[in-house]
Length: 326
Image (cartoon, rainbow, N blue to C red; front, side, top):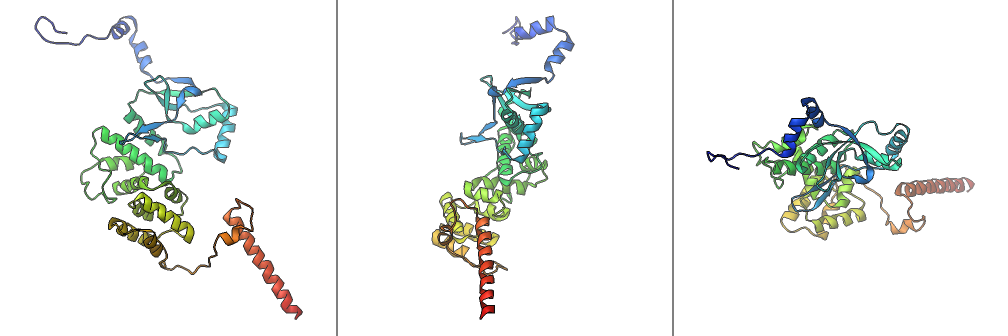
């Protein structure tokens, strides 16, 4: 709207004028304070983030129904949820969790109908950053969790105007002056180079990433393997299963080099994996199909090994007994 002088101005919203006229400053301050609300669980969604390619990224931190969760459920049944979760209200009126996913599962398992929430006005990018910062305070964080959360936070900072380059090498040698990676890793003490190494893990196919989480593949070899094409990674998984071995750092670097030269195939992977590692002890191997037929389906590998060892001990005792009778 323009006044007689031709200058434009914006009329205050009617609702804000009414609030100014008919409420006190104390009431207006109280309206701005965060309040704890009991929200039905049916109206609370787990966190999701939209990635640059348009895909939906689920909450990166796993919520496991383990012994600790069962203990939490018993506590919730006894005294309820004492610490409110943090959420934001979405455009459709539902609520999206930022922190408190374990509390939500515990409330669900305890058959509660509602849970306490603090609802904050946050944009999607602000919500991503808040979610990552809240969950990085956990005592135990899997490599896959840190990798995806770092990537999500970097993307959020990028959209907020911070310069990032998620395609750079893990050493970030082209990122002098870049502060996004430093901001991302600052809370956990990871350097910007380490942040980029973790983000590389998001390029691993699920079976290999799971092996990293389980400690079967070390972190640095995993970073090198992330440069392999997805079909090459799948071939590597098959080879690891057949050979019952995982690649060392040197072997992973060699596979990365062959991949970049477009010379990596199943035969090359097998050849590299068959190379003797430093200080590697000779191992006795037996084809799996010759063993598993003697055990019920689903018998754990450790149980099979223990049973075989006990059988060998009984065999040795029997042979010694025969030698004494001769």
